[in-house]
Image (cartoon, rainbow, N blue to C red; front, side):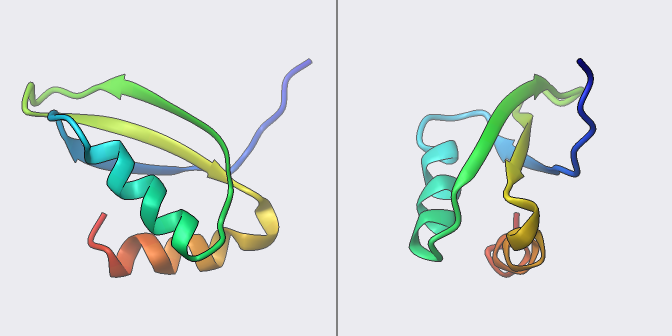
Amino acid sequence: MVVESEVFEITLLNKPGQLKKVSDILSQKRLNIEFIYQRASEDRGSSKVIIKVNDNYKSKARDVLEDAKF
């Protein structure tokens, strides 16, 4: 089965604690992460992170991530 979903792609510095910052910000706004995965970036100092939240809250999540400069 194939399922298509809208996701957010953000760039994080490749250092400890960066993903925790993102999850803490979403958690504070009571937004649950449905799935998350990471992919390599062309820049070795960063990585791309793909985040999926509930479709009913994707607009709120977009605002939260933009406000946090992700």
